[in-house]
Image (cartoon, rainbow, N blue to C red; front, side, top):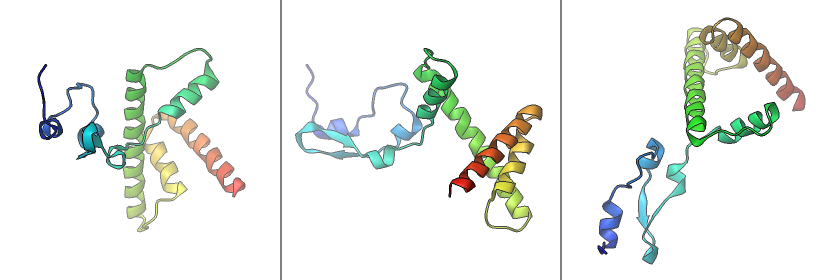
Amino acid sequence: SEIISEEQLITQEPKEANSTTAQKHCKQRKRGRRGPRRSHANCRRDSFATYFRRVLKQVRQGLSLSREAVSVMDSLVHDILDRIATEAGRLARSTKRQTITAWETRIAVRLLLPGEMGKLAESEGTKAVLRYTRSK
């Protein structure tokens, strides 16, 4: 029963507790009578959610992932990718190159992932690079 003006509505923070950091930094703008609208270009964050579901569907039919599980896995993948990219950048810099190639990425994966997991990731990555170069 409380009446809120458009200006007050724009300055209020969203009440949702589980909003991600990408959503918190979205800019709002006026849109006529309908109130504030967020611009989607500023809110976009790359997500691997569709890929998790595809892989899960291939591995085990009938299982699904909760939003929280997808969020945890998404942040895990982003973290690992960031670490691999950082390490590959260091390797490229140490060899006085400006471009990260498949070689730097392969070595970074071997350094970051322990034991058998590193070997498996390296072989799967090599297969993926070969498939990509053959398809061109």
